[in-house]
Length: 480
Image (cartoon, rainbow, N blue to C red; front, side, top):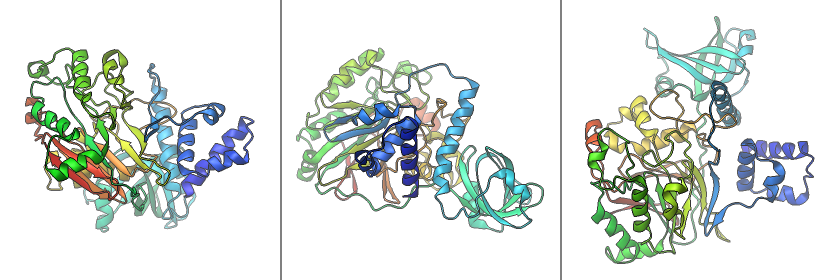
């Protein structure tokens, strides 16, 4: 609530700066949390307030695109990286400032003026992390005023465990006591995390099917399993209960890798059935045209799709995918994207964060609690998704496999909208988890194990579709 109020005040302030009358009607609009989120996000990205007031939210049927990426490609500079990280810092700093645990909050530059053992709190981005010979962890964090070292003692095992999972470039809060020689002795580490929320439950029995990694064009595309899925949607496959669920499935979300692509991994060409990228998308359009038109299909790109691999990824290029754009029941979005689904007169709808999941490969390995969870690498996606929600960022660490585009005005991978559903894919194995009122769902695939996956140890489970019941928030799985 505090963060929403801050955003509301900033919106009003921006309107006043542009000599826009803040009328009673305008304030009534700002009483709606979804309007505050959408307008604040747009203003942050440079939208003029007058344009914003006259703009209607993009709506198709029961799907509203709250946010997707629309920035036009342009040359990046070193300063863009600096501005990008500053934008990230500001966004997550706002979230952390609402946390009650951060008492006596001060800037890092002012810590030196504090008395020895005085209690204080700071917010900073992690620049460095190391373990001492005595098995303590020392972080170096930075804010806009300076840097400071944080000592996490091994005598505080729970705190040490939390510190062990921290990665570089994430933004955290620290509460502790001031020490000599520019150091803080940590008593608590505060991560931005999502708040605990009561799950929104739809009044009607409606399902969302979560797909990912269809990989049309691959020689090992699971045609029979995919055809079974199409037949199920048309009421011609499955037992009576499954057929009934098919009639109630109104939304189909595909989180990227619609096709297998060209030149994605070594010697991929030998595993392609369709070797022309445009023809791969034409075949995808043909297959998805068989889905009944009363079902809304939402499509985003992944790392196998045409276009840039760095995130956020724009919507799929019409030059290659026009036949998909022409499907009457299809909505194209970026990766990531934020949607509101199934809003009705008596239901606010659910907020959905769609993300392909390209960063999952990194965090499944570099985060100790996930790596040592006892789960196979192919089963870790829900744990990784939970971890990213806790960090409020889809890929916080710079310089690893995951690539991003440094937009200077905003960091689009910051999780600003609290999702009711977080839907992703990439790992080729379905899974689900409930966390703080958010339903986490990872889609499967329609491709057998590739030689590349075999080398890196991924074991896919093709043809398993998670189905999210919006009335109960339960996730069922159907094997096709």
